[in-house]
Amino acid sequence: MCVSEAIGFQKPDPRAFRRLADELGVEPTACLFVGDDAERDVAGARSAGMQTALVDRYGDEPVGAAAAVEAVVGAGPAGR
Image (tube, rainbow, N blue to C red; front, side, top):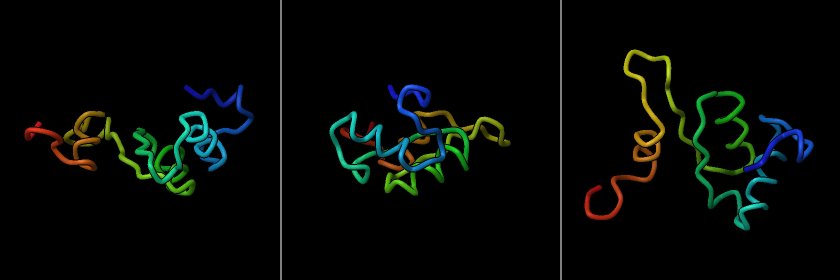
């Protein structure tokens, strides 16, 4: 977990997302960032080179985190 106060950058600054990838030991392009704010989460992560999924908590049919991830990466092994 990266806390903006500890790393010195806040979302949507792409440096915050790059720092997260660095902490994970991966390239930003290997990350899928799931967030619920289109500007701070999705736009910020995309500007750092990450794939993104938006969790819609407020629409007509709210989408949870699991559904948002499945929409991006697919059903996964064994059709799950």
